[in-house]
Length: 419
Image (cartoon, rainbow, N blue to C red):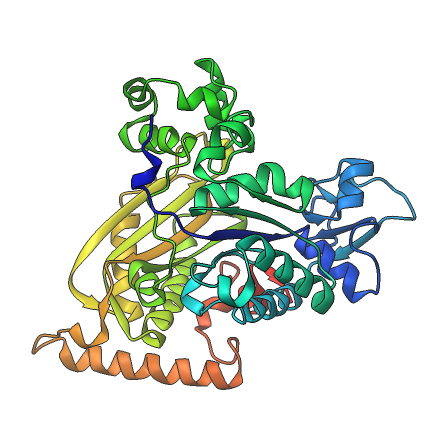
């Protein structure tokens, strides 16, 4: 048994906009988001992925996110539209600004473009109970943006999201306190619980676990033996509604954790071709570090291979002798890591990340490399300035116009899709 009296008791609400992309498209067309049959797809190709389906399309035709365009029935009532990421991002930012009218920025944790946690500790004298405040927020979003939402309320982030996913999406809003976990959350199927995907569900089912309550009553040592110490503990304590993650957001701390950038390639790349993509990614990450006045000491390169190769993904990291926010050392490090990868494999995904960030002032250069590094920093700052003023594609490397270049295509997209 868990002694809930010793755990933090916050006022956390998890808010999710229903079928966000599809709903925004419907509203922009003067249509009802809940009754319109509408699908948002990546592009016009038959194999394009469905990024969002309206509630009515899900209910009547079973079309959901992840389906392919060719799977959508040929029905004149169904509207198929290409994604407009710029509009979705603008709407998401407007909703965040609305939330900021209720709580300060550090009490808003944006989980995705359509989902956020908000912390309402100490706001009862302004907005009433947490339940009443969330109702007001949902009403404001509906009135100002025409979008319906689901919400969950709890003493921590996990409970708030879990009760939203399992109950709030059916009722509009749901509340769960520690003492309510056995009654409200334990009967829920494990696959409906945040953090449990299809693979983990199969493993849980294989040992007789089908509901969240089954995890709560499974011996912790056995869970740790089966799933590892960390995952076993997380499964067990989440099943009891325990979540030790901080509820307030330190934006500077989030930046200090690191940056990353990756791309799924439109075709298989060779070992030689992927070097161009790596150069483009390191350019982008170096720019982000300069903008945040940070530098990295650890670089990670990850690759995903073609399914036809039957190989596991590749991921290696290296800690640099000195911190940097210049693209060339990042690129050189990634190429060194690349030499450990399978040179004959077909590469379909590339990801570069930097972590262990320090303030820009911590960059140290030696007598020999100093002048070169300073020139590269000045060049990078100049490129940053030009791109900020004239757009991301206003200046770029010549290698990006080769058949292996991806920069020009990515620079015209938001979230991997055209605006």
